[in-house]
Length: 71
Image 1 (cartoon, helix red, strand yellow):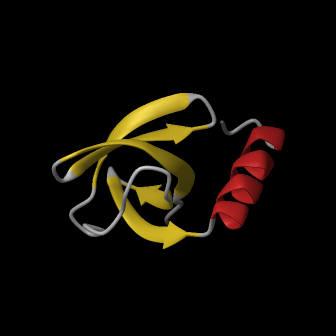
Image 2 (cartoon, rainbow, N blue to C red):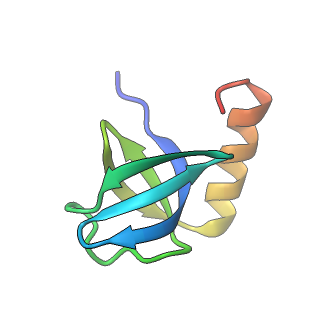
């Protein structure tokens, strides 16, 4: 089973991005989503942004993760 974590892109450097996961940041690859830009919400798995999601979905997922103590 794989789990992807939602986050918001706060910085882009070439094919890498800094993603904010409810206050925790990490650098992830954008090689699978080269069209992603600052402000986009993405699902991250194994160090890669794997899917763009809506801001509404991103905020909802992040809120649920916080409630469960995951972020």
